[in-house]
Length: 144
Image (tube, rainbow, N blue to C red):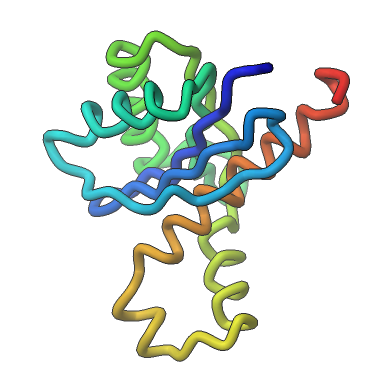
């Protein structure tokens, strides 16, 4: 059985986290965590708890496909994560994942007030979308 994959939607305030099933087919949200001084320890704990072998971090490219200020912050986060965890960390283009997550919540019938008061749901869903996108892109290349 393969190790699981952790998906991360980086934000300055919150970090959305998702994990794959052991067969690396389905992404499931784990939740959101405050982006503070303990976040790397929290992610290390989750990586051990879920037996993670790879971490995928959403990279916020600009519409032109270039790295902006936010992407530079994510690069720094990835560097710190690589030093903290004993697993590979890769990035994946995350353009529009937060918008898709927001639209999905609207389609699910959540009210504007619910979305505004629980922004963590969008971050958690975005992390699952990032991870699911990675799983879908790689399943053919790894022989699933």
